[in-house]
Length: 245
Figure 1: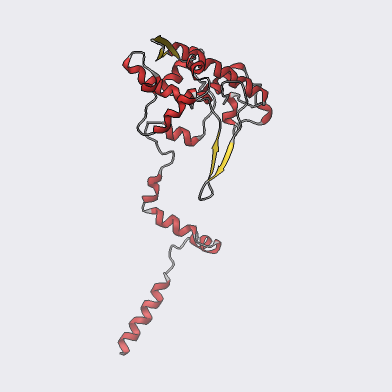
Figure 2: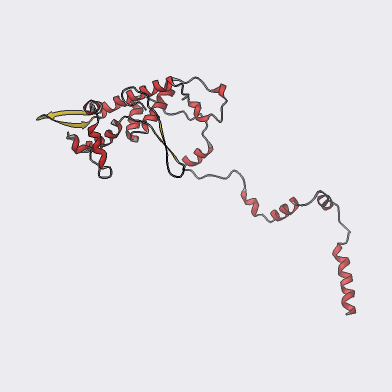
């Protein structure tokens, strides 16, 4: 993420308890101020910054008021008024969208400089070989950069930015990973195989036959008509024994 002055961001890695890694990337502090400005805009009036940047859950947010060149930063996203040498601010959606557009183009430039592949087919690398990946188009870069910027702003603002950039709807021609299809679909999933067959009476027979040896299977195919079962021989002997007792 570009930090507003064109400098390339450096990623910092921290080792947390339990062996977890935490990645931190420098960001433009104006993204943090933007949250409070949009929230205060619901009142629809100009306010001093001390009344805008207030947060009971994060009281240290007032440290944002000590940022260097704070007034220059605010000009990107606010309208400003001065009364009795005191400045009042009000969120400007129009200015914010234009500022975000600049951020998108800065990100596009960084992606190109670092030779980052952002083509639409990148999302389907499992389905296409390397020589099938087309050269990234400008639209691919803008869409990808828009996605990165959107991680720092509300969805509503992200959608407005997308319209301002005139980004078309993503193509549905490329395949998605199966897990995503199941996760994102609200429709009931129909089984592609008849699993009721496992409840049939002949399932026990099929299961038994699957464990038979080759010799047993061959014997099972022999025509047994007219043949006595082996049980009949044992039945006769048993009757004689009973008579002697």
